[in-house]
Each structure stands twice: as C-alpha cells, then as structure tokens.
Amino acid sequence: MKTNNKYDIPRQRKEELSDLAEFIADEHFPDSAIQPDVIVKRNNITHSIADYGRYFDGILQYKNGCFHMFFNTKRIQNIYSAKGRFTVAHELGHYYIEEHRIALKRNLAPSHPSFIDFSSDIQVELEADFFASSLLIPKTRLLKDIRKWHFSMALINELKDKYNVSLTAMLLKYISIGNHPIMIVASENAKIKWFKYSDDFPFTYINATAYFKVPALTVAGDIFYKNSIVDNSDEIVYAEDWFSIWKNEDKGREFYEHCIYSAKNKFVLSIIWEK
Ligand SMILES: [Zn+2]
Image (cartoon, rainbow, N blue to C red):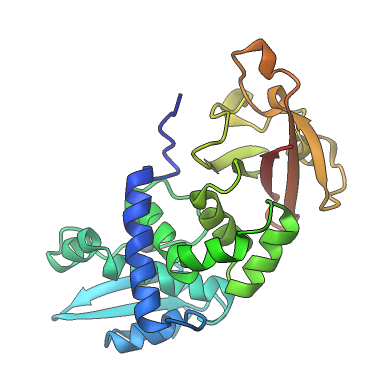
C-alpha cells in the first residue's frame, strides 16, 4: 500500500535523525527552549549574515579545516525568527548528520545552497529539514505536550508558538510522530508542489488532474478555481475528492481540510485529516 513519496524520507531514517537531533537538543538545552545559534557557537562554527541575493537561505561550507555558515538576509530576516531558527537548525543538520558532514569534508558534495521552503525532493535537503524540525521540537517533549489532545489546528498553532517554529515545521514533526493520520499538500497556482502524510494515513494517491493540478472538488480547488474566500475553518471533503480510491466503501469517507492561503505567492497549504 505504501508508495515511495519523493518529497519524504523513509520511516527508519526519520527515526535515526529524530534520535540524533533529540540527543543534541537535550545535550545543549536539557530543560529550556532550543537555541540553534548557541549550538553553532558551541561547535566553533563561524557564520556570516548578509544579503546574498536570491540564491539561498543558508549554506554550510567546509574550508581549510573549518566549518562556516552563511545566512541570507534577503530571504530570512534574522536568525531568531521562526524561519531563521529553522534555517540555522537545517545547516546544523548538514553538520551533524554523518553522511552529510563526511561528504562536505571530502569535498564529494560541494556546499549546496539550502532553501527552506520544504519543496525539495533532494534527499539531503529532506534529511536536513527533518533533522531541523526534530532539533527544534524534540520528540519526547512533543509527545508530552500532545498526550491528552486530539489533533486540531488550534493545537498545532499553540505548539508552533511554543516551539517558535513555522506552521509547516510544526506539521512536519507532528506528522512523523503518528499521533493522528494527517496529510499536508502544498500547491502553488493550482499545481501540487509537494505533499507529506503520516504512516497511518489511509490514502496515498492524490486524484490530481493533468499536470498534477489540484483536484477541483476540494477546498484548495475552490480557492484556485473559484476564487473562494479563505476563512481558516475546517471544511468537510470526501475521500474521493482528494484521493484515488479503490474500494467502494471508501467512497464518502469524511475528511476535514483546512487551508492556509498566501495571496502574494498564490500558495495554499492544505491540512487534511479524517473526521
Ligand atoms: Zn541544505
């Protein structure tokens, strides 16, 4: 049933990265909020913050036996904002994940530009993103926080503020914990850019139209094709509206879809979960 999703990494690898990130988080901040910039300093990694144009959010470079990070003010305001913190944590991923670090040291992989928009299908980028979300939101702490709560957008919003991360970073980590079957689909100009789902999500094939366009009978479809107003509510959609279904009894299964819309980027993030 499980298909390979090129926008995500295998479960076992996620567990390894989650454990590694949590170990580092607890080593540096056993009972306080994670400050990725402090971890950078404690590892004697130098950094520069400047306007580098549109080319990257962050880069980790290895030169003359030293690691150095570059952060781009054109794309992140500062390293303490939710996006800035995630960018620093992502570059720490390239530093701490052994395979990434070895590749950089041996110059097998030249320092590559990292973009923190979750749209990458490059494995090292997906791994650094997952490491980052796991460093900023250590698994054991999150499990404790969600112990008594069912999934809701109110819960996700509360948690994202608590951990000072973006909504997408929060969802990425929440989904990996497998507390409730959830799928997120990011689309731009009606085209599906990437998607991720929890291991127990019942459907994996999006019923996309040609050119991987958003299906029409969805909340995201209403936004793109009917210019409907986004009111940040949970709306009911049916399994067949979003997914290819193979079993008759799946027809009419009710899901919630909650859309976050950015008019500037014509971007929609759909969060979908079973009712
Ligand atoms: Zn990267």
